[in-house]
Image 1 (cartoon, rainbow, N blue to C red):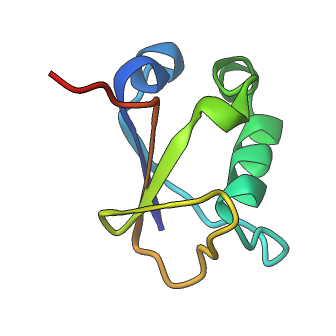
Image 2: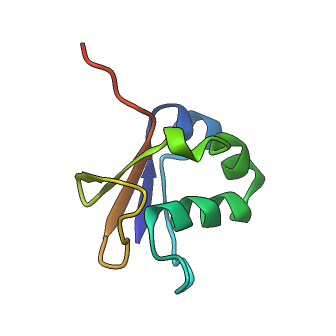
Image 3: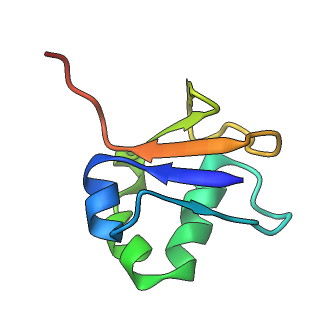
Length: 83
């Protein structure tokens, strides 16, 4: 599974994407964010307010309660603004 980071998440983590293999107990987007935070200090600091982070599974924007099991790509990004 690939996680892609956008905007200030990318900048704060100093990486745009990574391949991950979360453990079986990581079921939802919320679980994934918590697991990522527990893996590294930069992620913990960047994701201190997980409710601000939006997610997309294979290009479809989803809530934090969405199951990640069949996703190939998970995008994490801050709220978007119009323009």
